[in-house]
Image 1 (cartoon, helix red, strand yellow):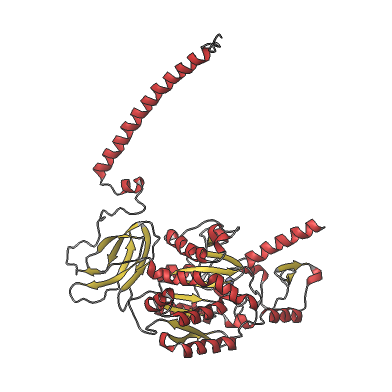
Image 2: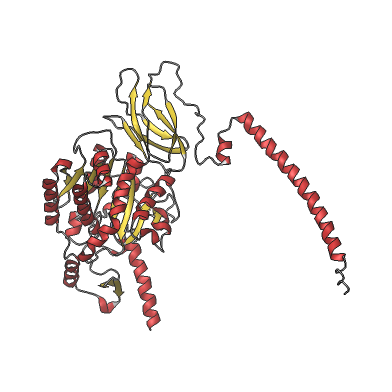
Length: 501
Ligand SMILES: [Zn+2]
């Protein structure tokens, strides 16, 4: 009996964990107005119990959710907290709404910078909380983050670095209606993290069906050229990175062209966290989305594909509704991760501007790295670019712009590098294709060196390896014949005679 109960609770907790976070499996269990999740509903502490005996009435369920939400900010409280923050920290912030929810709640956003609202040649980062209405920890932590930056600007080096060098945009709640309804989906019962255009399937291509919250995010990302971002979720403890979906819908590791960079960013978060990297479920506290479980129409992949924005999906609390008294602890657990992730976009990566040699005008050129099939654009207004990379490698940055001669440069990815490109106008027969610059790309392994060796030299190199191998083979064969002979001799040699005393 005890064993079967244990078995049941283990199965249920893993089921809940899977369904609870980014949530493809969740769609099977969470429906509007449902009060039964396949018979799984009641929480006893952090455990879930199941079975007919534990079913609740809708009224009981709502009472339970209201109890869970005790101590959390209501939408009204959040609205007030954002405005109070801005009043207190107006020198380094502005607030603006990116749109409205289905029920008309403004999606208030905080921008933190020493020049809020001004275009600067600096990277922008965004944090989005409460994508799922029933994952409220993120919206609380984001207000704590904003206030911490305000309190520590000019006294803490990390706070000062972020405020002075990054435009940090914080949307504490993307789904205020879902929060008010104490459920995952928005007021139209749509999962907002399944509502974005998908790279493999046309499921969300109909603009008319797109939710107002999703549209607001899409317009926002069109307007502000974010370098990186993170959305905050609950129900697990892991930093999740693209791709989230696979072409064949199979669950497997499916990395995007910037897999190494993403692993670096995810590890930056998990490694700075109190215990995320100690996860027994996810090595190093990070996971590829499709390996965990594939989802389609997610926000993360869309950001990377359409806007050059490196987004992570952060699961920051195993329990979706921890007791509100635990929020200060959760803030402490996540504080350094959040700060290091934002600061990471200026402490690493390749940065600079692209301008024309003739008039010195900013050029919104394309920036690629040799060997990585991905392009970001320099910003439209100031032509600054911010290309995140994984440290430990050398990169060849290639800059192209129609009507201009392309340029490239070799860059060491170990630390942040600033490199400006001045492009000359191209004339009739100037080539638009850039030859390899001879950078040693990658980790400088012998394989990489071979890859970039000029062809005649490469052939010579291969011939030399064949000759050396043949010589070694012959030498080994001779040696082994000799040792066999020796062994035979040994086997047949009589035991040494005991010395006569
Ligand atoms: Zn979520």
